[in-house]
Length: 124
View 1: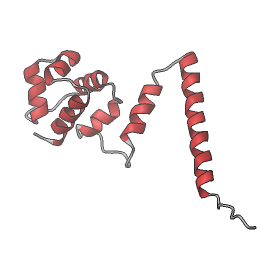
View 2 (view 1 turned 180 degrees about the horizontal axis):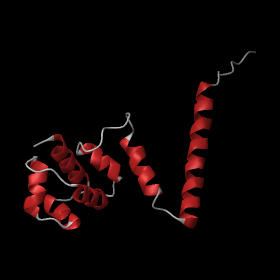
View 3 (view 1 turned 120 degrees about the vertical axis):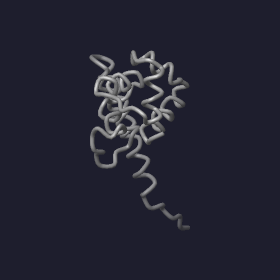
């Protein structure tokens, strides 16, 4: 099994999916999926795109993991996935997500400032 196959298995485990589930979602046979996971067969562009869609991941991430694209500078996979998911939102939901993220960032920055501020000493 190659790195791509191991990565697919990890992603399937996170989602409580089987190789057969992924094969159905990508419209390929379970035998083909098994060969991709075991490293006996490379996945083509269409299959990689279908895998990304089935796993709800950005296509470029799947292409990188498959070795088709060079890895980008070290990026946080969680941030990449969140960015991909936020990109699916439209209209009001996008505005709500933006407000929520800005609010969370403001709270984080406020906590950081409080932690960094010197404590006042009491004198009597």
